[in-house]
Image (cartoon, rainbow, N blue to C red; front, top):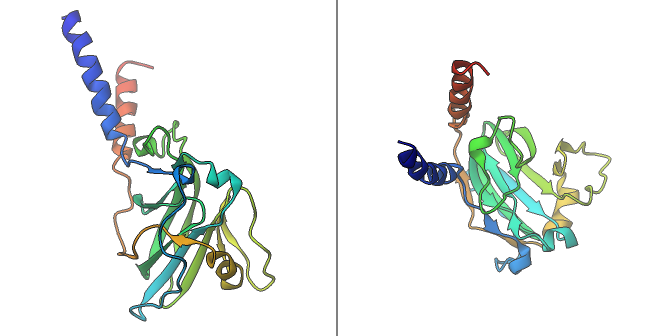
Length: 208
């Protein structure tokens, strides 16, 4: 029986590693983004919402081995390497945005919302209004320029900024991945929360 347990343990660890979810993308250390230079985009539908997420170039970002990922309503939407930007069209709704830093090729989202959630960098809610354009700036080193007519909001290095602040910085960036449409999602609960509930039940059973 002991021999059987020892054999199955590595398999269990491998399966757990596979469940840790969401593979990362290489950082700028391995080469700059080869996407096209920034080009402003218009809404395809006046009832939609346009969202830019961008990252100014910095020495810190240029030396990353793995690029941080943008999660929208708990789904990985794309990576954001140095000097890159993402452009998306949203349904008008509320969205939870997160930036997560990968480790060893994974964002380890199975651990999200638990005591070992060590990959989350920033998180905040975006209430997207019909016809609006939002600029989200991600920079771990430098704060955004001040705009007296706009109150920047966000969490840590992920900040919503005005067009006045964003557009001059966006002009130097390159697109990371093709334009994407994001539909409103009523199901915002992470599947992995069930994992933590299961852990809690097991701990109760053994009296810890």
